Image (tube, rainbow, N blue to C red):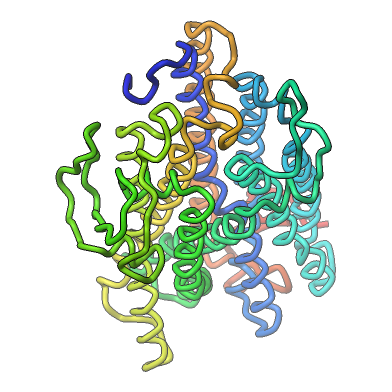
Length: 481
């Protein structure tokens, strides 16, 4: 780890490790938090319009997963909010008045989403079907508002704007509009949102792809696969275009980060593209696949496009060669996974266009099952690229990580890190346990023929245990009010 943290305070390593762990853990939940409300409402609307009991049942069950996921996200998100103040007091103390509005927007969005989820859950069997659906419509917008807040803060850290510095180097004359809508905000926000739709769609569809491989091909499982997978497949090519756009914005707005992403050592034209490979301190690259001139072509559509190299700035103002290699690998992994997901989406679209039905090949469903995990990996790689590529700056070209880190002794930070790991293991294990218990109850209902829809009588024989007034599965006792 020494090449990553040369000439920085000792507490930087535990502080960064803790932040990386909590961010990597929290972001696993974010796709479902942002996109599952939309997937659920699409399914709910389809069920109401077609009078489809299976779609309504899916929407009801997914709303239960949405609520549990939101509760877990509150825990992991709260830990992150405390870490900003505890681990990086230098940044929050100096810059909080400039970019803190983003965290404020996220907090209000979180509160609004909690209220809307509670109303949506309460509405099953307690409200008229149309009223219940209409009350659920604001949910996806509340989720997008939360993403707006956090991406506004992050894009500001990458391209800080909306302030002037006084003689002591402190920000004054803050312009909130410019601080929120920075040059990187638009590309970063839409790239992130589309990534959440793609990831959540493939994750949810992957569950039903596994069911299909195990012989479950009834309408319930077909809809459970088709609706989220179609959303993800439609968004995948859009995300590919947005990904190319944001890479081009990084090329123009953060040229040193782009040089790290592409391991470009010296400024030049006709720059080759390396697929993976390792950058060494002398500027040489070992391993990987070299494609002549491609990096210049991708950056500016011409082989004579000049690409800025890492050596254009002093060594202490740019990522180390180890950091650049990490960024390059995560960027290439993200792009590689995105390319494979695009092929999968094209496979699905071609079959649907020719046959107006789902693919029949088991290999398609094997790929679909893997796509959920792969898309989560791509999201993790995207955040690593964004954050590590900005090093050594915590506020790009205005404050270094070493200036922002807490003065707490590293031994105390390591102990705190250990506590956080234990808490997260317990939280995620509880999340998994709850999901498995819900699944077992739902399967029990389906096997006994007691499936019940939100808008009417049981879909099967009434002898089995019905799903009661909550969407969490069968109960042995209790009655519906």
